[in-house]
Amino acid sequence: MRKDGRLKARYHRLVLRSGGYRNKTAKKKAIVAVARTLILIIWHVLTEGVPCTDLGAGFYTRRIDPQQETRRLIARLQALGHKPGSGDGPLSVRGAAPPSRGTRRSF
Image (tube, rainbow, N blue to C red):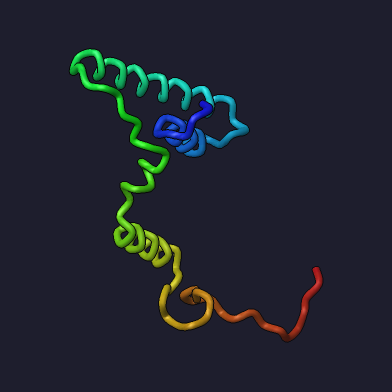
């Protein structure tokens, strides 16, 4: 796809979700999914008689509520054992001892 738009953004999202750009199967799945989306768009235009309007490349990013995304990411960090917002420094891990600088063992 040469033009930036919703279909191009959908293709890239699906490829990344299915396995990345090096995975040929992921690319094929994304192509089939975008083709299905295109068929649905064509069907809607023909049955409803309305012109097709591209929703834009930022369609998926505009749908995200920033506050909801912040809450989701904070919950994810807490589930991983981090305490976000507990201080000025980097995120701290619960139960993790600071690295010792004492004796070094060589195995």
